[in-house]
Length: 635
Ligand SMILES: C[S@@+](CC[C@H](N)C(=O)[O-])C[C@H]1O[C@@H](n2cnc3c(N)ncnc32)[C@H](O)[C@@H]1O
Image (cartoon, rainbow, N blue to C red):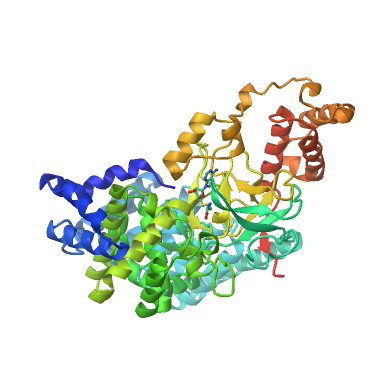
């Protein structure tokens, strides 16, 4: 995940140090510090001394101009009446800019904009605004209107269950409405009809509902690493350190890992992903946190749980984390979320003792992350905390940057009233630096149409996730496992896409594969993004990219076992026919055929072989569109 460009933002911290001509001394001093705790404390006193930290949580906004806002809203209302909805929505946006989010003026403009969006057919925007108005200071006597509109928008978006709920609230809020008894009666009848229609749709949907596919780990759960299959083990290698290896032959299609993130959060367009760590559901028009207005939830329940897990404390400073602290802001935010979750769960003393013991420990690399009974579990703090973070290999300038970010984030937290006793500051700060570096190396983008970090321009990242068990898989430019199932699902299922004979390492791709990019550019990506030299087979053997693999080759040139030449040749012809006659969207229905073809080629042809690479790509793609709902198997 590391992105060199982000490090240019060092300047935010270093400019004053450079002006004071002390930057070289700083790096020398940092080298002299014996521990992560003392590095953090040194950085903290430096940033304080040179007045690099904020002195207040005052965001400098001045937007309370109720009269201007009211005038703008009234102009919007006139445009709305004239059915100029787009212009009306723009006017309401201007009105919103002039009023504080906690005021009635703001809520009214927001509600009116939701009406304009509804009339424009922008139902998701309508819903978002309506939810926002509900969460703010909207007059109770008008609330019924807002819930009715939300219900209508939800129906339009196919969210029928939610529409039913909104109509139910609408009916309860109708008592507060300032309306004649007769009008209330008519309104009630209309909403009740809408509820009945929703119920009819729901009954239909229930009838047509698909049974979710349950994925099973091949061979059952691994005894020591329950998110992995029983057919694998963890081993060390000189080139890649820890890695996952097959203890039995694994076939394409076999499930080798089912993992849940230790920590996750939206990565950009917050309005579509629930912020709660245990949810991450993608949804339309989520509920906005009524205090910071910066994070969103799919239900009130998720909001309450997230508050308890730390948002309560992150809330007052989230604006500053996003807008004032350099680096990858969503990753910084995720680090804060992780820190608060565990700090609050364990309490100060236990947290500090655990992180201190970890940093002092000399645990063998292969057993890092395993608990005292020899289990490696993705929901265990120490498992996630002990993931590789290349802190020791990092240039001191980069480590200094991470320390600055941690100092800055904790400083904002303390400014907001959070108490950290001074004697624990070193441990807490160093732990936050550690968390940042673990995330920097292991955190994955959850894209709507790409499994990992991707170079395709059509991908759309919705979340950042940390999967401790999946992080054990090393990268190969010729991956033999790949993510399967719904791409936005929080639960990550990894399946074999090639045959994996006993003793072979299971590797996924960190976003780059050999047939699309030459060795040099792949090495560049691995080095720039992940800071390692890739030792996967295509790099060692310098395999040609797809463009250089002959398409219409004679099978004989590639055959490994001459006695199989006729069979391979005839199966290749069948495969070519298959590619012409079956549409990609239907490949998932022919997976068994694709598995058998790739198995035949695996043992009988020399790679790279165009049809093998083509079949491999088909299997990978078919896995990612073949299921609708994935549930981890309970056994
Ligand atoms: C997510 S971790 C994978 C597990 C790690 N090998 C361990 O010992 O815990 C990523 C790190 O593994 C190593 N690695 C992964 N793929 C590699 C490859 N193809 N070549 C060399 N090193 C690799 C690099 O050190 C990289 O920073």
